[in-house]
Image (cartoon, rainbow, N blue to C red; front, side):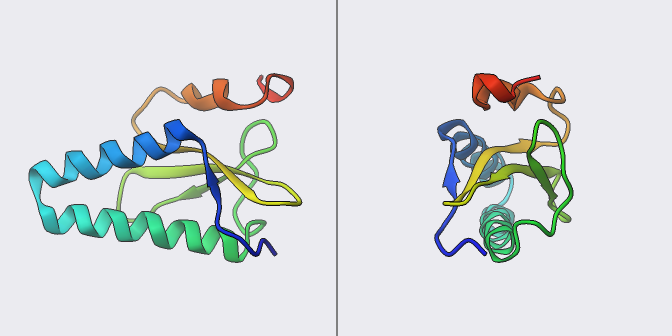
Length: 105
């Protein structure tokens, strides 16, 4: 089990921030729910990172239930590294360029 908080790629953090701003324009209450959902998703991932299915290039994917987002992450011996907090309607795999060159593909 991973004992420390996840590490987020800067662009994953920017995606979460963009989601918050989008929801904030529509409803502060929904923006707060989105923040809470992302936080809870990251907690759940860190509690049992192997629980969610394998995805692309050695990553795993956690699909959020109440928002059209999913979290792409990789488990290492030291941490959980989050590559994307991706909107489900974005171009599939756009985040692959964030992987180390040896794992892109």
